[in-house]
Image 1 (cartoon, rainbow, N blue to C red):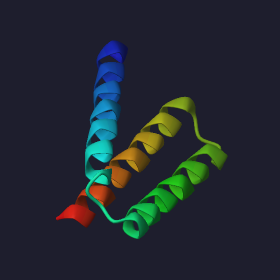
Image 2 (tube, rainbow, N blue to C red):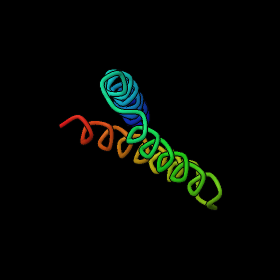
Image 3 (cartoon, one colour):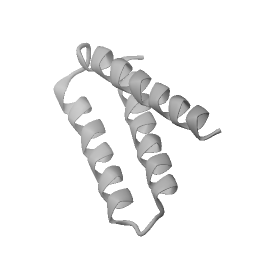
Image 4 (tube, rainbow, N blue to C red):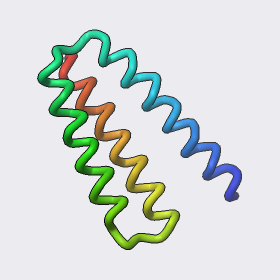
Length: 76
């Protein structure tokens, strides 16, 4: 069960990295900077929070998914 969860999280993270790199190549700089600023703030809030390991990983993954959604929304 834990292996399945870690494989799923790793797959989501890899997908986020691939999509964000592809989308970034076609976006304007100021809009992309805003997405990355929001992503940085999201990561800092999660890392400064007093959550457990599992919640921290899930929240960081949520931040990555939100970044990808922001970058995709710019190009649509």
